[in-house]
Length: 303
Figure (cartoon, rainbow, N blue to C red):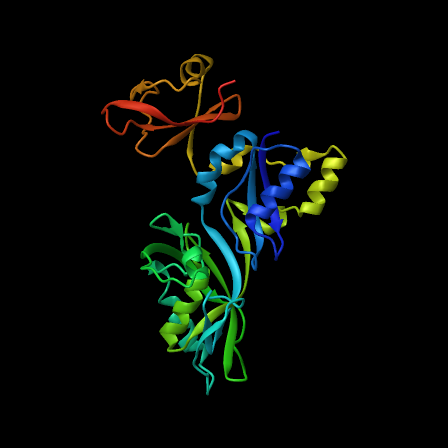
């Protein structure tokens, strides 16, 4: 079995839980997810099976779209609704939509984030959540994130010294949406947290293309796995491509280092996905240390 399954992850499960269940459903060990979703978050989780696990890193690099909710008035240790409250700043009068929209707009582009203590980022060989659970503190590394768009999608609701509104965000790899919500509050002068989140797009897959674990199990029982398995080529859709001849394929399939003129004047300054008989076989790019040569970045198929 080989391919990519766009799973709709339910709340209450970790991404690893989904992988564990799919291994049982599919009766295959080579299964991997393409980017962690917190247990309290539902949404699109592309799962790679068989040889498709080789394209996980490219799916992880893609942009992601989320729909969620920011709440002003208090912050939590986890930066979402599940954590213990650590600071309260009552909202005594509602903020205007103009103030909110300007604060959100200021966070579009390249921003710097400090990962939450309850996250999987490693510091000195340990994950931050391990320090947090042990009651220890550690300096967290700053990280760059790209926010392509960040917009309010509902009218702000003001109740019991809290103000909340829904949003949609289109962001790059490694963005912490929890932290984005907290930073939005800081821009407005209030403690804040992310009170709801759903991922609606990841790895080029949308909500509409997803299958639940129950649907996948049923289709497996009916021997209709082709209905939920997408080809691994979906994982490299953003790459430039080149179609190989029969003779090219015989040279390329085993990962040979090639002169940069092997494919004529094709520009390999950005990696290129090489296709043979409508299937991707490898990804080639410029040799990192030997000028004038091309080398395989990854061999995906050679049979």
